[in-house]
Amino acid sequence: MALRFFNTLSRSVEDFIPWDPDGKTVGMYCCGPTVYDFGHIGNFRTFAFADLVRRYLEFRGYAVRHVMNITDVEDKIIRRVNERRVSLRDYTSQYEKAFLEDLDSLGCARPHDMPRATEHIPGIIEIISQLMGRGLAYASTDGSIYFSISKYRDAGCRYGQLVTLDFDSMRPGERVKSDEYEKESVADFALWKSRVPEDGAVFWPSPWGEGRPGWHIECSAMSMKILGSSFDLHLGGEDLMFPHHEDEIAQSEGTGAQPPGRRFVKYWLHGAHLLVEGKKMSKSLGNFFTLRDLESRGYNGREIRFVLLSAHYRETFNFSFDGLQSARPALARLDECLDKLSELAGSVQASPDPVLLKDFTRALDDDLNVAEARGVVFSWVRGMNQQLADKSLKPEGAASALAAWREVDRVLGIGRAGPAADCAPVEVAALLEERQAARKARDFKKADALRDAIKAGGWVIEDTPHGPKLKKA
RNA sequence: GGCGGGGUAGCCAAGUGGUAAGGCAGGGCUCUGCAAAAGCCCUAUGCGUCGGUUCAAUUCCGACCCUCGCCUCCA
Image 1 (tube, chains in turn yellow, red):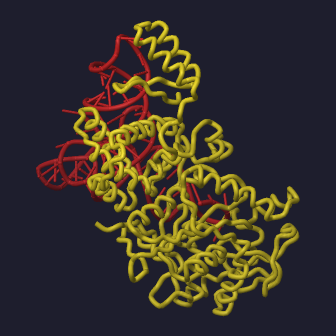
Image 2 (cartoon, chains in turn yellow, red; image 1 turned 90 degrees about the horizontal axis):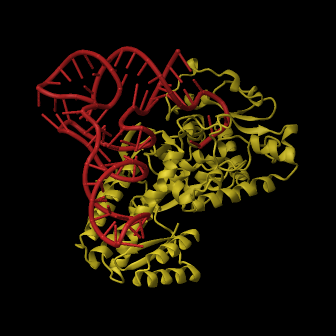
Image 3 (cartoon, chains in turn brown, yellow; image 1 turned 135 degrees about the vertical axis):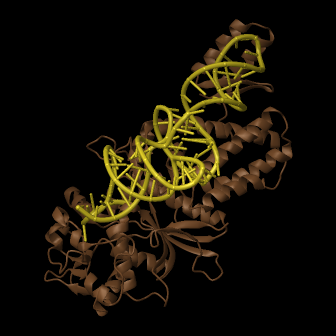
């Protein structure tokens, strides 16, 4: 079966066939963070989703170029820079750094390119010039440049590829910003915003005067610069479908840079939002969490990743503390099984068990059904445990299972990162030996007291047929 | 008002025109000096409500209820 993705352009699941004639290389762009603050758990659902797409494509043998932009100039950033009287770069770099740490903590592979908007101003200006040259953009009286949707449509292009739009029935309402009053039509959007006093030191020269880029243009400039004018995959949160991605298409295809018969992007994938305890995350509801908030509550990145990858990406996912709690025992069960398999396999090598890989691939080929894939993994764990329990598994079988697991975990990234469990300190190990001696002497009172002492020190004794093991409590 | 998702066990979440994956929680058991840990087993006659189509619907159709989101800040 072929790999299939739901493409927002067609609103249907399609076979994935990259542009590359050899079908090997894939260009993938995901809208990244605006670094005005720490990323929240909803942002990271999208980035974990992008990470899953990238890893799965690699698992399927594609050479992926994964690009994620860093938006480091934008209204909120400018406001805060001026409030705090720091430079733009000083302000954004701290959150950019935090973002990268958070990605690492979640076990997300770093994108191959993470371009910053402020470092692509020339490319942005170039695109705007092209659009001006083709008559698709116009200057307003204050020097801002807008994209004209009506001109774009007059040129035979389609605006409204990702969403069904009916401008007449839309409610422009309160959200129209004051700096967009100069537009010819409400649907038009800013490519270049002319400098205003509130911008402080944040502005760049351009053929149309000093100013800064509009919201959408950076993604067009950076994606086309790195991946070419036409590439395979573009990802983002569902809220970006309109207007952000729609405008990105208009700008990018408006340049006419794409080869004949090719669109700007072949497959658009959108990740659904998450709710927290059934509600939209908001500061006023007190259910707004950054990754760091959760970590300070004692949950680790691995557990959070596990939770973020528990539902299909196109379904709204209800993030709850109940769910987060359940990650730890579930992962412990997985670790336990893998430890036992490792122990049995010893140094034996074997080729990966094809059954696990086949079931796993079938699940993810189907528009990344990660919930199904996890079901496959845990069913496999049960099967392995049964064979371990009735001693029917041979070292070769264990080695084969582990080899398959390693393949699977290249995609899921939920396996324990470090080697086996932490090593207990010598004092604790000494107490354990003492306890063993007491047990041998059938002095159970002393043995139990030692067990309690060890437990107080943060370690749990697990008596097995091969002797006691120490685990961190 | 327009558009689009959802409603599956205590919680989270897959899935299917032929009778419900998986995880957590809960119960039982095995192991054990006793425990713990671990493992195994069990746990929805039911998939929002009401109609319809069908030999058969949770799955298709219609209506309704509830809920979430988008409609130019938003992952």
